[in-house]
Length: 303
Image (cartoon, rainbow, N blue to C red; front, side, top):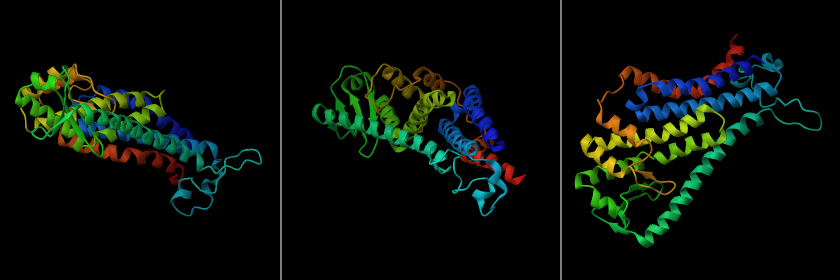
């Protein structure tokens, strides 16, 4: 019971307190890619904690001291333990953490497939009404509203409306196109699908809601940073302003994107990168967070 209580308290802290602390921090907007990793690390850590807590709640703790053969037994885990249910039910306790993991994996697969189907339908429309521009390496769509977006995936495509071609200068258009290609190169659609899947699996959890919202905006910031390697901040900022009202289909990344005003302020304000020590600490924490619930579950075995 002690491991279950410790894991439940840890999960509650990760699910409610950690997102508040991260939202109040200034460094995520300064290092968006690292911040996305931190949100995903917290999400994975909560999932592992929930899975292990379910196991320890269902299985009596009497088996902790028996058969210490290997790491699983040492941590109070065994494939032979059964959930104490009346006969004739005989459910292996390992099914419980597997169900929690399966829930998130199924949600992730569903989000990936749903976005892929939406992109495929839109690409079919583009094949009919759009025209390929070799110079822009993009599909040009006849539409008055300025819009530039990308459809990531196995066959990625960047789409530019004729309204955007009229509204943007050559330098602005190049900056926006580099922004969209950064989404494709970074495979940002997978990170967004993971955040969406976690949010749908745990709708009631503050961490899930915050991770979904912040991941979408942080990915746009990461694409901004990639484009700013080759273009002045003022050029991308003015292009972002022109694109802020554009709409995009489901499964696409738009140059305007979420949090356009926040991104404009960030882009035009002082540029302060996080201290290397802080970046190293956050990267280490993001990588080790999913393992922390395992350590907590093993604590009674150590003591």
